[in-house]
Image (cartoon, rainbow, N blue to C red):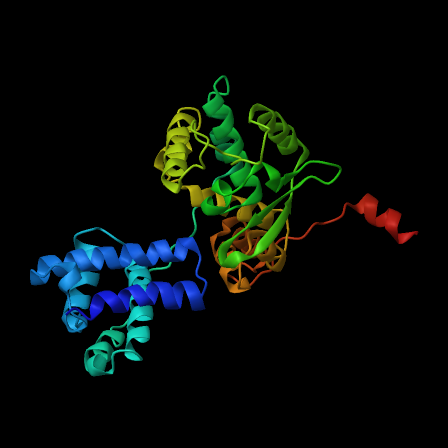
Length: 330
């Protein structure tokens, strides 16, 4: 009898749901990892997933699976490490419940994470952001929805999961208009809204059914949009905007680029990183530091303050003789 199937089921029901109360996003990501692993193990061993033993998932198979993610599926090293983290969580859980397999488990847990290359975050310039927001055809219902979603994503910096989970009752219109969302780690955030955005929100909500609270960005069937649908929405409007803004043609713009754009806008406005971290819902302010590395304008301002290579300080303003004479008699 397979010892893997009941152990894996208890991992989801006992650890993730009962003890950790993991979010639906975490459980979905873990389930996707194990679905990929079991299919890979079936091809590698010829054993059906329901008949696999825990001992079958040895270090060689797990290592081959992680390599398969990169070479065959084209996943990045960061995605590989995320899958590895899900596997480590399960094998750590299994180490207390399957002591007979501790040797196999220890070898799997010893598989190291792969070093990743830290790239600069990509963000939109002001002309690029304006071009994308103006791209949807607002003569249609879909176009008006898309325009508002793009505007809200750039101005608030919400994650995709936060955007598609917004409901009409998440918006509070009044003297101090704001939206409420529940983000990563179940952290609640309240974000103030600009007057122009409030105008678009008011007009959009008036188009939606008013009987009860519903998704702020619904499909034609009234259901919330999916992450894949938002990705297609962004790609479609970026392609349209590139005709008027050529710099978009060579950029890889994803839904998360909208969030990065909001962060860089706040940074360029002189907002400190601690406040930006609160705005974006970062658990650790170190996460916000990546925007300092990506801010080329900040680096240029730093360079302007440095002395030249021959040791002479930067040129300073020299007052005219008339001005010096005026100041001398004050």
